[in-house]
Length: 358
Ligand SMILES: [Fe+2]
Ligand SMILES: [Fe+2]
Image (cartoon, rainbow, N blue to C red; front, side):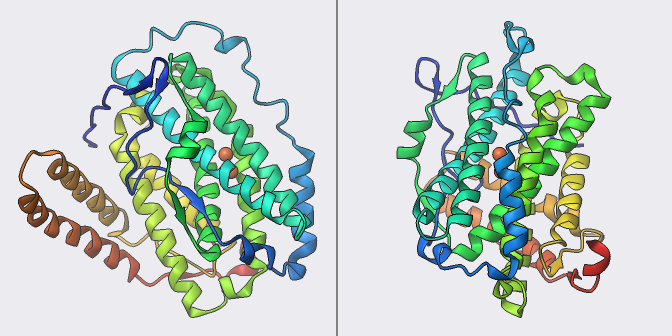
């Protein structure tokens, strides 16, 4: 049984505008990268595939999808208590990560405009999609009398620099994990319509196809650069990013267990399924994937969550700083230990099955 943590009441920046949650290692981040390195990418080996994806993005299949139809036009005051708080938290987290994608893609597109028109177009179309997603989520927040001030967020958040290689690995994974998160939630609510307490979830089927296309673009970009997958260093980085994405996902799902329970989703089953599917999908892009069938795989991920909860408890206590430090040390060591043990499990070679996977 997953122990639910109560979601705190939302803090306000000004009336109706929610103060963004405090930035931590686990909140969605804003990124910047080496724009010069993207401009210089030689994509000639996979140009046909990339051009085909750009044309798909240009076709804009979802241009009429993000419409707030009649179903949205009603009062949502009957959604109360923990369901309301945890849903607002879900909306905010999703909106921030969609908006983070928008800012990064828009900036890349702007910088590449005169230097690499194919990639500039692709990033421009993906920025268009992410802006729609973030905007739609923000309007949903407004239904609960709150919204995020996105221009304030743009200026106030710190931007984390990631080298281009890391951006390609992590954005690829976040698009694909985003696809699985949305589609599994959608399918569950199709089968169990009683839990559909707000019409946003109905939009997820076409919505997640945007994320899928974005993921496919990053896959083609990655495969066009053999140095990103065809050597031992790249394999080590890929294992690391798969692991960190899965640990972060586990912690955030378990921390927000009450939200998933409010829509009838079992957090553990959902987390395991999202991770297994994302890992399998990643075999189309990466030379190796993690062994999610290893008997201790999901147990160790959950141990990371348990220890992270202990860290939060220590941080929130009013004990003196030096005491907190010594109390946190074994807990942090435990997280690193469990991550290391997963990292060292023999990965699955995806290149061996490349022909059958395609
Ligand atoms: Fe998105
Ligand atoms: Fe996306």
